[in-house]
Image (tube, rainbow, N blue to C red; front, side, top):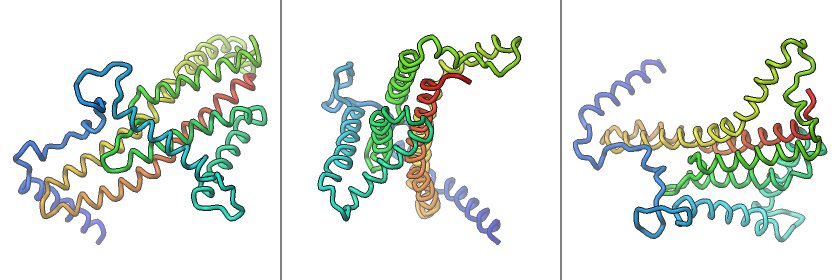
Amino acid sequence: MGKIFFYAALALALVAGVVFAPEHAALAIHPMDQFIVTPLFGGDHISWYTPTNVTLWMGLAVVAVFALLVLGSSRRAIVPSRAQSVAELAYGFIYKMVEDVAGKDGVKFFPYIMTLFMFIVMANFLGLLPMSFTTTSHIAVTAVLAALVFFTVTIVGFVKNGAGFLGLFWVSSAPLPLRPILAIIELISYFVRPVSHSIRLAGNVMAGHAVLKVFAGFAAALGAFSFLPIFAITAVYALEVLVAFIQAYVFTILTCVYLKDALHPSH
């Protein structure tokens, strides 16, 4: 019975798409327009110093982090407020992650990792607001975050271990003839880290927002049958809320893994 209902709804949606198809360009669906970078104060030219919508929403993400972690927990009440509870939960969650993954030596980097997580998760959640801009959907933003992680763990690895950090690329447990080949593979995978680190976050966030925009376009085009894509929008939006947290978590835990390799490079 459930399958019959599903196929009937799908058929109605297809028929409605033909009957109520948009004839005007105003109803055309352009899911990638929401990612266009525009200057805040008009004009078309963008220089490195030009304030843009990316600048604005990154600044709002920083303000949101400050409001939650500093203002929200400033009273330090025995019976915490909601903001203080969320701040304490985030603090404990990330601290435990750093300690479990990177070890006791990695705890000294907790402020940096906590800052990364809070900025990404706030930027992701702010991007779910109507008429907002999702900064983490741009590879330019996520690539900078990933590059900072890459250079940080590399510098830490050489400072703490010296030439011993190169042991990360030498798989001593493998048979000797295979070790040079594995070393090349390990070296390539190491330098690919910032690429995968940045694309994973930007790609997942961009894909989800594009899907929402497509379904919203369907809702505008289907007229009387707009309730069908609205159900899909609700489901995808709920998924996007989950993705907003998961992608921040994945970026952060990978940072902890890379930090662990830098602190303890031997295989």
